[in-house]
Length: 95
Image (cartoon, rainbow, N blue to C red; front, side, top):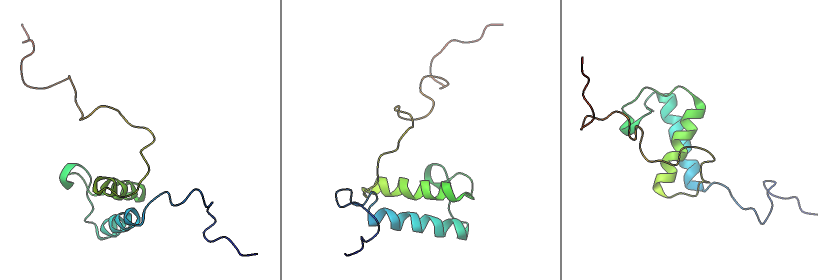
């Protein structure tokens, strides 16, 4: 009998595409170099966590359209903030 390659079921296939793996690998290398940063446009702090580097790599792959499963949890809304805060309108404080 021939041994199964990779220990996967035939019907299952790959969960993550090869392109996604490449993105994660790239993110890990950038983390080791110290050039991987978090936040929008890489303006946040330096990434030190291995898990965070993987998450960033998968997020980049998702944006580029690579085969990556959907996030399990998370918010359904758009951007942070929503209704609170903001500079337009609102009531003024009276003293």
